Image (tube, rainbow, N blue to C red; front, side):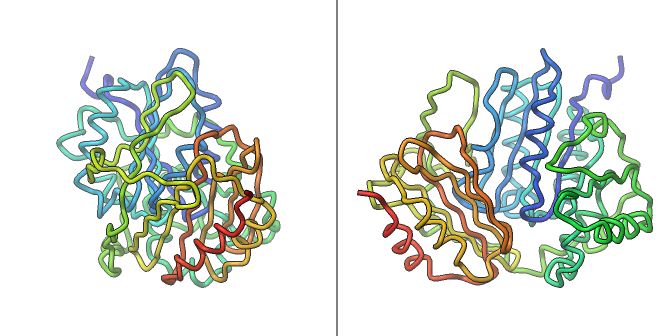
Length: 360
């Protein structure tokens, strides 16, 4: 048996902010073959980690998260360390990596194909999700990272086909078909329903970044002055689920905890975007409709997401640009809200407005 045949099949699933990466990965996890162990490494640009909470908890599934930056640059050093720990603990039959929506995949691909992981991992198709409506958005089509996510992918899936017009889908498909080198597969999906067989397409090794230094064009530092990462996660599930392994910061011994009405706030910035995340005390309970007004009323933000306690129920709020929706969720730990914006907003003011929505 050669080394490669023992290596772990690995896929990167990329796509711009809010395209539906987590939903797509959840659809894949729902079809995980019985008896297989899968590991997922989730990376969020935001600080408080919400994507991971939207993933299922089940036997044979190990989720690990790196929050507060992109693993392709500012967290680059901890990518190898975190991957090694995850592989050692999970001993997975498959590894899936979800970089942040503003992540440039080239650095991750280089790490996975580099000497440390060359014989450990078998890097297969890199899958990029595309919302065809974005091809009409100047802020997206002028973004070099967006282009390179497409350039470096082997498979491109046009997602949200139920929300786009037939013309928008055709324009996207036509542009993708003109790319060189040609993609191994271009398809249309709705609500992230992906054919698991696509993961096993093999990389062709010819893909090149058009803008390999895209990250270098932006200030990519993350501020940590109020950046106490929360390690004390108590789930009511009896499962092997590694929550928020922030191996690039070890604050575990002096962790600030939210008090009722006094959330922990964490901010960051990089690649021309700013993020602010809040973790509220688990007893904080919100008037959803009042809070929704605040979160939908924010002007010009890229993304808002949250898991919010409303009485005895919890909801997942999700806003991409000016569209939003919400749904009940099984999550039951604390309220978390994350905002990503092209400008540095008055986070203190927004926090006060959110606190005014608390039910007493």
